[in-house]
Length: 174
Image 1 (tube, one colour):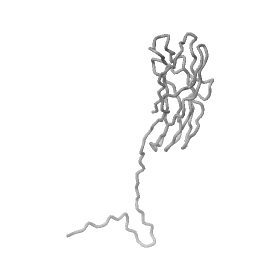
Image 2 (tube, helix red, strand yellow):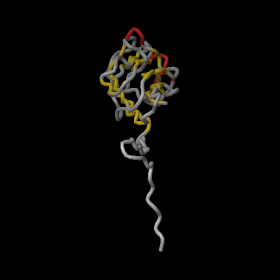
Image 3 (tube, helix red, strand yellow):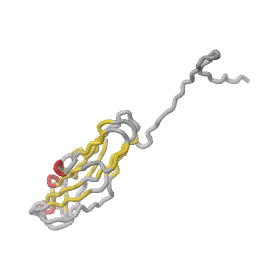
Image 4 (cartoon, rainbow, N blue to C red):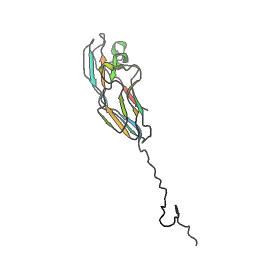
């Protein structure tokens, strides 16, 4: 029975450096994810013709891709049907054009790179009638994460009827 010879990297004479090539693999276990608050989330109450404003709760993007270029963009949009109460008739609907969002600064970050709020302050708030950038990471590499607590502002129309209005605010990351 013959046995295979052991593998050798190099054979070198005395007083000479012998080298062995070593390899290993770094894996990315979880990819790119976004975590949002469990709903329903109440942002408060107000009267017709005024504003209702409140924070949505912590949103976290976790990037475990271990990428050389670890950039991402988180987006936000409200459901196209707006926010409704009762039977959802026109008088019982507040359109997404009356609902604004501002991310504010990150409440926590981890990893290297540049984390950029979509709307740094209330003056930069944007309506949720179209997809908006909520937060992004524009430079850096490796695993990272960012958390923010956005504010939702509702301009309640003067003709709005009394009721608890419900709608969906959706976040995604790519």
